[in-house]
Image 1 (tube, rainbow, N blue to C red):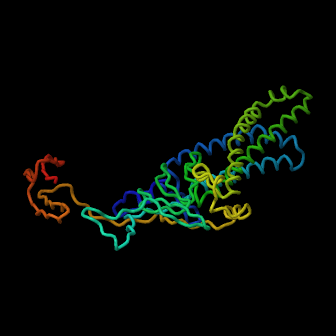
Image 2 (image 1 turned 30 degrees about the vertical axis):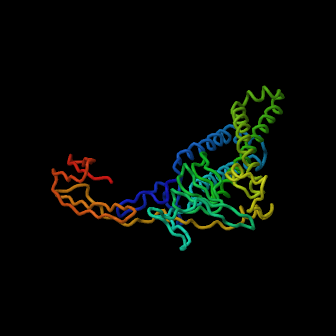
Image 3 (image 1 turned 60 degrees about the vertical axis):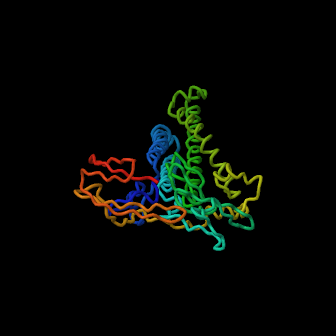
Length: 361
């Protein structure tokens, strides 16, 4: 996910590599992260074993089960796999809750009765205190985005954006997980867990059918279906990952914590100002409305005039140099190329070979 305020292009769209094609009929677009290619790997890790299961296991079970049961096994699996992939795209391809950057830092707040000495200027405090449900929470100033982060917001070092209710950056979906896509992230992880259980269970069912039909041992039956052995091992390993992740996030949802907060603040040892009780916490994640994005990724920037680097005649305006007593103005100089303007001892070389010296006081 590229920065919300990327370098501007002349008279065109924002230089945001995250915007993508519109979703048909929905009037919105995919917003992928900077490592969006990892989504292709995740899709392959789902589609490849799903294909093996359909060809070598579910298709054989369609012949073994009478009536519509065999067809139901195949149809349910295909529908559930497509549902899992849709949740993956909803997680990876939407704005997680990026807070737009400020063009300028906020004005510092200070008492007018305080007098500043020569060269002293008011500075922005690094943190501010915010009271949430009677508990004081510190919000930090972000130098990159030039804003005070709202509560539960953090700056992702990979996406280089401040994200509301920042949970973590997931390399498997190539996107930050935050306020606007956490619900779909958990649903994706949980549905992947169920999908692994589905494949794992019916692989054992197929092996049992072979044992019953050929009156053989479990080992001989497994040698008859090597695809089932591969799927059993694959889903067993995957269940440790996605299953453990599902349990962990169920705990986080029940206590209204993010992954970042759980490791950073350890609310188990202190009061959690966001905890609404188990029922209220689940309703906040799954039944509350998802806020609209604060960003217009397809907005066009204003065309700015470009100052040429050099021309047949160049004009130089010296900068004002401030000190404790006042400012000392310098004059404007005009000169043709191939001449040097001697102002001090330090020399600057122009792209065309001309030299300029500037006095640094």
